[in-house]
Length: 329
Ligand SMILES: NC(=O)c1ccc[n+]([C@@H]2O[C@H](COP(=O)([O-])OP(=O)(O)OC[C@H]3O[C@@H](n4cnc5c(N)ncnc54)[C@H](O)[C@@H]3O)[C@@H](O)[C@H]2O)c1
Image 1 (cartoon, rainbow, N blue to C red):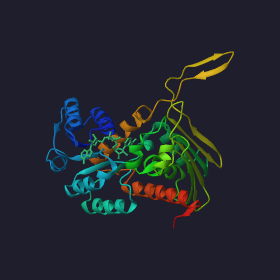
Image 2 (cartoon, rainbow, N blue to C red):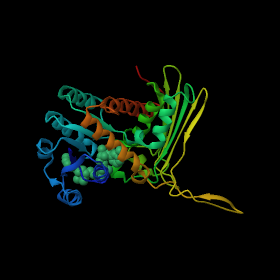
Image 3 (cartoon, protein in one colour):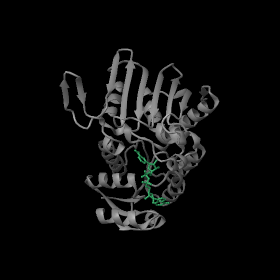
Image 4 (cartoon, protein in one colour):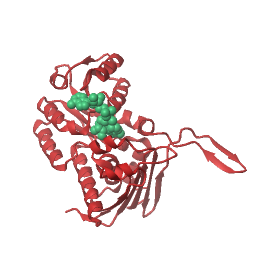
């Protein structure tokens, strides 16, 4: 039985608790939060004991930790968990600074503990299918990847200020997906963006609408389109064009019923947001972590993947500020 301690009992902590409940051979043995209420609520649901965060990390009844706390707390928790020799499942982004992620990487390496960066979209059955079909050569060499990724509505401005902004908090998922599908590291990043959805987001120094073009050394291209607004739900589409064909993963709709009248065809909205859209991906992600820790097999995405996506997010922010492409050496 892999005994897991959950750090952070908010939105994503609750998702991971549900996933663990569905996995044979894993249990939530302890939970911790900065506040008593969320911890008590999740303890009541899972049967876990409530501990203080550092007490949980050091507890003899915890084999692995899930870090689902706000991003600015990850650094200290990663260090404490690595020092305690615990396997680590860490929410994205690992940290808001690439240099601090490098320091975490060193601590994880020194401690020889398993580490997963929670880029859950790699575990989405459709996106994983696209990647494995690329790897099987079904469309030949990849030439251009197009990622459309739009949230249904913007978060509060307070969140924008503390989350690192669109590139480091939201697009980071798409930047990881770009690396996953291109199969080559981007060497240049060009970003454009604006605050078209909410002027308060612009006043806070961020954008809510952005497009980024990545290119690799061999000339492969990826275009990412992000918006904090989509009136029809969580818009998540991917297309990969290769020398011998094209792979496309469409939106997941609330249902598959279509109505046709004299006015035309109508389908349901896209599944509302990440909790619904990626529910299966979260379950598969946790199942991969549990199996890998238990069996001692390789874990992916790694902390290096967390760092590489962060470097791309930093380059996108720099490119937007400069109004020019940023070259990565
Ligand atoms: N992979 C995804 O799809 C996804 C989705 C949402 C959030 N996230 C990431 O998960 C993390 C948490 O986001 P959220 O939306 O669940 O936030 P949240 O605010 O809903 O929950 C965070 C919880 O952590 C608690 N907390 C704060 N500091 C703590 C500390 N030092 N020790 C223990 N508990 C602490 C808070 O009280 C809160 O209950 C962020 O890094 C975010 O980027 C990832």
